[in-house]
Amino acid sequence: MPGEATGVLAEFAASLGFDDVPESVRGHCKNLLLDALACALSGHQGEETHQLEALAGALAQSSEAGIIGGGRLSLAGATLLNGYLITATTMCDVHRATMTHITPEVIPPALAIAERDGNSGRDLLAAIAAGCEVTTRIGNGLDYPEFRKRGWHGPGVLGPFGAAAAAGRLRGFDTDTMARAFGLAGSQSAGTYPAWGTPTVKFHQCRGALSGLMAALLAEQQFVATREFLTAKDGGLFNTYANGGRLDLAVGDLGKRWELEQIALRLRPSASLMQGMNTALFDILAQHAIDPAAVKTVRVTLPPMAFDMHGKLPVYKAKFEALISAHYTAAVILHDRSLTLAEFEPARYDDPKLRRFAEHQVVTRVDPSLTIVQTVVDVEMTNGAVHTVRSDHPKGSFENPLTRKEVEHKFRVYAKGRLPASAIEDVIAAVNGLEHLPSVSALMDMLSPAKRRDAA
Image 1: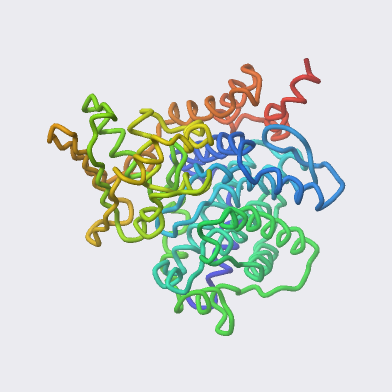
Image 2: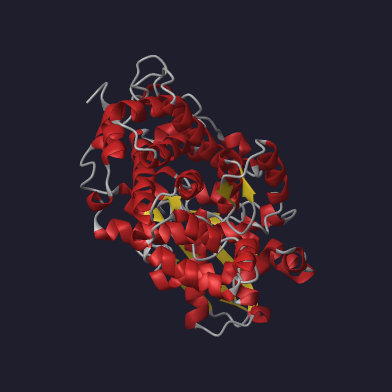
């Protein structure tokens, strides 16, 4: 439906109510929220977090919105910093079809607006559903292979639309205002792959959240903007960033088939495309008593994209490269039988034994017949035995999803030491019963250690 895509998505986002969201979708939205909160609490350990905190604090001198894990900033500052916290330690969600992290862009502006305005948990859940569905639908409509061929990176391009949808839904936008918010969001869509290998790829995500927030707030002021950004002939997103796009994927069965259910989660830190390798290695450890000292060679066979992005770092420099190195990650899983942020601290990744193992005993190979998430791992022992596992569906993918209990465990792991024990359980209960939460500000108070101390 040329010329109508923006309007169709705008009407969907503006009119979406809590009761319009199926129970299974609500459940996944709760998982996405709790997982994002877990990632954000871990993000306080991120190497560059203090730099983003300085930028966020400089944006405005107000304090309407809470920071996940403590502190208050302006709407803009909280959106930017919370977005970075969610992605800082490389274990947030990913939408496989567009290789885009969704929660860092959608959830921070939704939390900021909902806290400021006293919205309920029902309102927040509908906003998260609207933002995630708009982001993934527009991403699919871009025809990802063509989009990627041109060098674009999804989060900064797609994120502003989802952030605007979530904020606009909370502010009660009508279809016309939402469409203009999308026009303003699209005018800020940016981010390309030269940033890969640097923390700038994570900045794409939090900047996408901020861009969408600004788009919504400006549209609310009746600022004039195009109402049909996606399919405009001259400069429209689908025609400029791709090759006309796939409108059927953007708007087909909208509200009946929920693309956001395809958003995958990560149980452990490390890059999205390495989750298949991680799953295979932990399966091998579960099946065999592996003594790392008796391992001769680890052969990791990856699909082309994963190999290009993660299979060429046998020698890594510091935390960020360790997080995206298949060589180091394989080495430390076999040695520690664990993969948490503790495995990505200097005391661990600078261990000479691990560095030697990663460089000389982990061999990566490419197999074009493997799909984007498939991986085969062979662990050859010094006695000649070879243990082989193929992972077709990484843990956390929609085919092999995390359970709510696993998401809760992840939250407990990364909330420990940042929040009091009572607050950790209160947050889990609040998210599980989000539809009964009278005000999102109560959830944000639970996520602030200082607030808990004041209340005590």
